Length: 465
Ligand code: ARG
Image 1 (cartoon, rainbow, N blue to C red):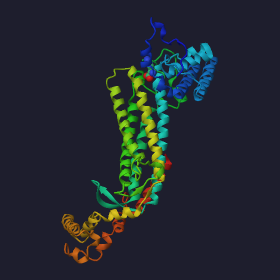
Image 2: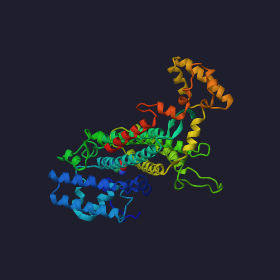
Image 3: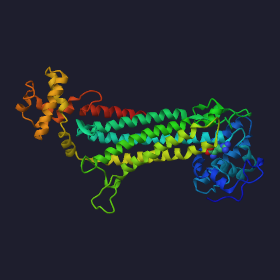
Image 4: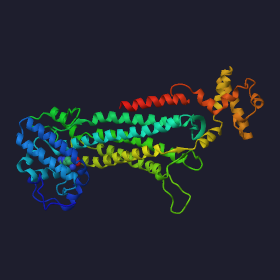
């Protein structure tokens, strides 16, 4: 970071001694908030345009400001801009550069505005863009899940409760459960975006301004839904940031659970799936290892995203109205949250598109653990036995199977009839995995054609948004 020699602070008028050098560095935010330069410049251009329309700036001043800010943006884009710590933050850096660039008119840009409404506007503009990008990336991940679910719509696997084999499901059905979670995440972010997209500009420091500004016009220029209603609230509200962090935490919780399944399933003990080599790494000592680093890292990064939610909540809890410098601390958690979400979503979309599964291993696992025991109970109910009695009968049959080391489908008819004379030859269709799957033939069920119908509906939902 290069620094101009001793730049004058915009607020130096009231002060009798220069800022302590350490305090200057301690309070500066430019090292991280420079990331907001595009939004800061867009907000300033809209502000100047509105001021000119209201006769507060001349058309010539507006033109000079817009042209100057545009050149500054191009210079920053090109990496040709000297950020200065003594100028504290992105706002004062750009304003000082503007005045250096265009002279007197630059000093008029801040008319009717404060850094307090400016920074809140910048962060909202930035977050709105991030939310749009994150929602797109969720959709890409969902599309990858749908593709795999379609390919594996008939693939049998054990469904688990308590991580114990419960009932057979199709892999396609299991994958579509992840689609649903992500769909809720996408909705939550769309809902959060509505409250992000409200414009603080015009609140000035906290009380509004004495200039005849047109806030609705500025909001329209910046694509905001409306100006914020209350100036005190406008500069101090960070609910939108907390809401985003909460939606992000829930999304990361989902990605972490998904990670956990990928890690378990790719282990030798499960052997259900294989992750592409390019998504794994080896061990420096154990030559046989192929580690699922990507899902492990996503699971690990979930911790910091949860932490950012807690940081933002705690940041706000003690603040009296209106703006306090504490709020400068809102940016790094937000930036890191958005970066981690985008990274995790991208890597998972790519990973899932290249995921292969071992259908034989999955089917074999579903054959263990008496996964069709519930089907046998349902069969007995159809023969007129009350469900609780049927449950008891099947429990005894399972205990017998455990002793014998055989699954229910491997018991002979005579053995099964020993538990209930109602059992007939037709029981074996019920005890088969395919029969069990096909029987769950209703909306939300695991029968392959229901899974295909769910996939078709999911595609339509994705296409809508
Ligand atoms: N860097 C500050 C922030 O991020 C900008 C607003 C500063 N306002 C002030 N009155 N000091 O919040």
